[in-house]
Image (cartoon, rainbow, N blue to C red; front, side):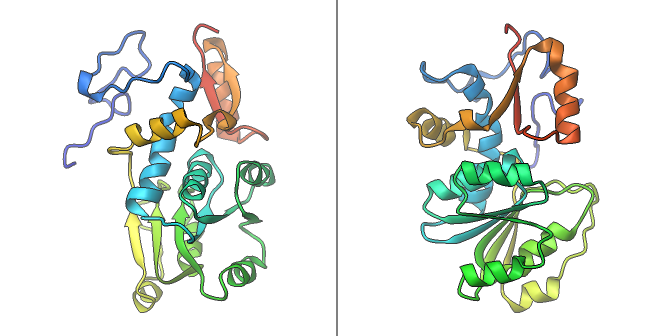
Length: 243
C-alpha cells in the first residue's frame, strides 16, 4: 500500500489508547465466542509473524527454518513455521527466552553467540544451510542480518522482520549474489488477521502460552519497564482495564 497508515501508531491517526475509538467497519474482525479478549489481543503480533513466514517467506512442509530472535514476533514465527510442517532452530542471547522457545515447540535452540552455532546448523542441514532465515531482532545492531544470510543455503530466503534503528546496515551482498539467495522485507500484517483468528480459534495456535503477565491500567508503567529491561520471564504483557 503506497498510503500506509495504522491506527494509533502515528500522529496522522492517533487515538489507539483512547477510551473510545472509531474504526471503519470493514476493518473489524469478530472473535469467536470461546476466545478471550486476551487471546484476541495477540492476533496482531501473530499476524506479523504469519505475514513474514507464510506470505513473504513462503515456508513449506519439511523445510529447515532459522529464527533469529526469541521475542514475541520471533516466537510467533517459530510457532507458525512449525504449524506449517517446518523444523525450526531459534537463536537468541537470553537463555530464559530460549527455554520458552523450546517449551513452545522449537526443535532446536542455541545461543546466538555460541562458537559452535555454524557447526550446529551444518550438522542439522547436512552441510547445506537452512532453507529460510527469519531476522526478528533489528534494533541498534547489525550482526543478526549477516548471521541469517551466512547460515542460509543456496537459493534460500532471508526474511527481515526486525526494525533496525539505522536505515543503512552492512550486508554481504556479494555472498547473497553468489549463492542466489533472496532478501525479503516484511512489514505489517496485510490480509492475515482472518487466517490467524481461524488458527487461534481452532487451537492450532495456542496464543495463551505467550502471555507471561496480565496487569490492570495501574500497572501500565511497570509493564513498559519490564519490556524495556527484558525482565526474566517476560514475553507478552496483556492489559485488562477492568481487571
